[in-house]
Every structure is written in C-alpha cells, then in structure tokens.
Image 1 (cartoon, one colour):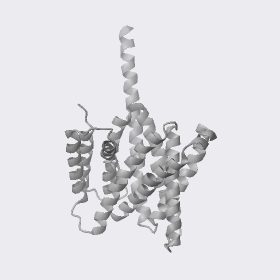
Image 2: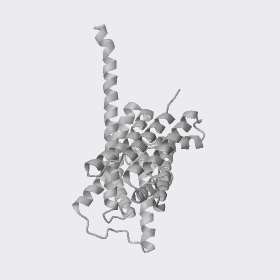
Image 3: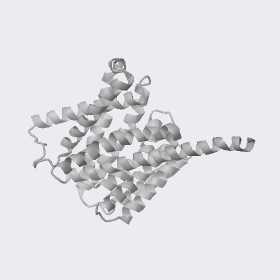
Image 4: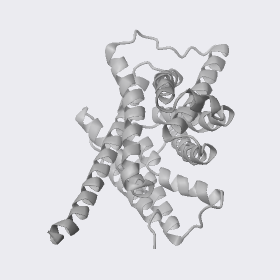
Amino acid sequence: MSGLASNSPTVKLSGSVLRGNLMLMIAMITWAAGFPAADYLLHHGWDSLFIINVRYVLVVGVLLPLWIFVDGPRALLDADWIRGLWVGGISFGFGAYLLIVAQYLTDPVLVAIIAAAMPIAGTTIEVFYKERVLEWRFFVGLVSTVFGGVIAAGQVQATSFVLGIALAVIATLLFAWGSYAAVRSFPKLTTLGRITITFSGGFVAVILAAIISLMLGHDFFPARPITFYDLGMLSVYSILAIMISQYFWLLGVERLGIALASFHINTAPFYVMLILLVLGSAWSWTQAIGAGFVALGVIVAQLKR
C-alpha cells in the first residue's frame, strides 16, 4: 500500500505535465494556422489594414462581453482604460499592423521564425528595465537566433523584403513590450481583463488608422466580392489564431509555467511549414534549418545555471 501511495503523486504530476504540453501544442498549431490564412487574404485582394480592422472587430466583440460576464461590470468600469489604450494601441495595434505588412512583403514562414524569437525580445525588454542581468548564454543564443534568421531569409535582393524583415523584428519587440507592460500595468486585473483591455487598445488604434487612411483617400476595402472561403480564412486568422490559441496558451502556462511554456513558441515556424505543405506549398529545407537555429538560440538564451 505504501509503495502505491508513494508512486501516485508522480503519476499525477506526469499527467499534468502531459496535458500542459498538449494544450501548448494546440495553442501553437492554432496560432500558426493564422499565418497561412493571412497570407491567403493578403494575396487575394484584401488590404492589410482592412484585415487587421476586421480581426479586431471580431476579437474585441467577443472579449468585451466575455470579460463582463466572467469578472462583472465593475471590473470593466474600474480598469485604467487610458493606460490600456496606450499599451494596447502601441503594441497590439501598431505591432499587429506591422507584422501583417511584414508578411505581405516577405512570407508567412519567415515572419513566424522572427516571431518565434519573442522570448529573446522579452529578455531584452527586461534588461532595458534593469530587471535582468545578461549572461554569456544570452549572447550565444542571440547569435544563433540572428544566424538562423539570416539562413531562413536566404539571398535577399529586394529592398521590400529587407523592409519586411525589419518590420517583423520591430513588431516582435512591440509584442514583447506589450506583454511585459500588460502584466505590470494592470496587477489587479485577471488575465482575461488584461487581454481584453490591451486588445481594446489595439482595436482603437487600428480604427483610428483606418479613419485617417480614408481621409487621405486610401480605399482599403476589398476590390472583389467577399466569398465564404474568405470568411473562413478570416475566422481562422481572428478567432482560431487569437482567442482559441490564447485560451489553450493560458491553460498550458498555468500547468507548466511561463518559462517552460515559452519554449513551445519555437515550434510555431515548423507548424506553419507543415500547414503550408498540406496546402500544397513546397518544403524549404533552408527555412527549416534557419528555424532550427532560431529555436536553438532561444533555448540557449533561456538556460539557467
């Protein structure tokens, strides 16, 4: 009896770890699905500004009622909306727009590889705010990550391609800063509240950008009729790749912790490549090797003594 009793906690812990990893795999697969979906829309008559506006309308339209239902109206009324709009507008509004423009100028796999370096971007933010001291592992990881990005990019000749890479890097830094600021700026809010208030900031930012764009005479509406397949891809990009992915991500973080969970981000480029392969695209060993170096760099940068 005593032997059975001593072994049971280990079995239970292993089950929890397995479930946590499974949830994080689902989170990364659903997040990765958003890249090919956005790529389809971008190359079938959808303007990047229109895509990002519709995405935020769908996401915030679900999150706001859900937040009120779960945490109550008082949580929404007492929240620091000024700071929420600022943090969300800069990071998740402007950053999301830069990322989708970067994908239009490059390709979904390369953007996913750059986004996979977000843990290193997060470490950079913590160093900037003097909350972390750099060690040699970080520099080794950074070199490996940059090297992997160069390999994945291949022989770049077009100026627009280089611009796309730069925009993806800036977007990744903005996302990392937004995640950092959301946790520290809203300590009294639940995770759902932090997501909602910052995404609402992103929503306001892209709506303002759309209004300014229209005032300047830029018509960003689709030039052709919207099909049901378009709506399906938009649902994947908005609902699946954001809300459902975030839900499983938080469940996984709850079981494994943010440090271990962040390693799963490294798998996103491979999931993007597999999804594109299923959809008929060719497999690129150059990008796969580059993604491998990026993943290795992120892991080394996060190693502890």
